[in-house]
Image (tube, rainbow, N blue to C red; front, side, top):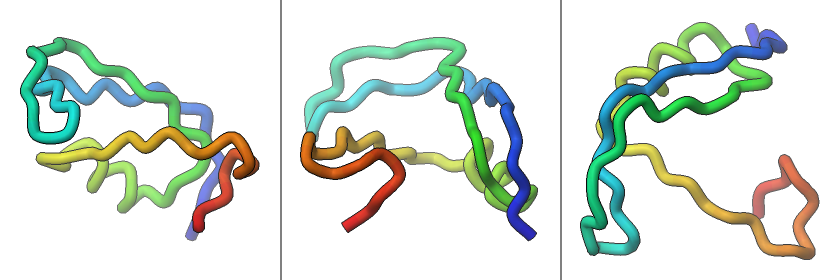
Length: 65
């Protein structure tokens, strides 16, 4: 069941990588989640690796190729 939420999720300390290069550490990474199942939120919180991908300008927000 998908639920609409407005939730800030603290992911804690994370290593910052750009490509294969480590740039440093950050502490207290917080993301805003608008829609997810309870299971997806748990998976996100416990994930070892999370990728952030900037969408192209032509692509409307929320649309994936």
